[in-house]
Length: 56
Image (cartoon, rainbow, N blue to C red):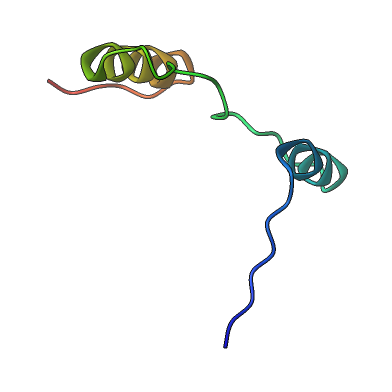
């Protein structure tokens, strides 16, 4: 039997900062009221902002 523990999100961020890691992609791209197409466009913009190139 495998047992997993779930950390609160604030604790997760704090542990990553203590390890010296930077969370680049933990940015909000939408909420429950955002359409699927809207989230996709927001994700594309976010990836391009971080240096990725989107092929069409």
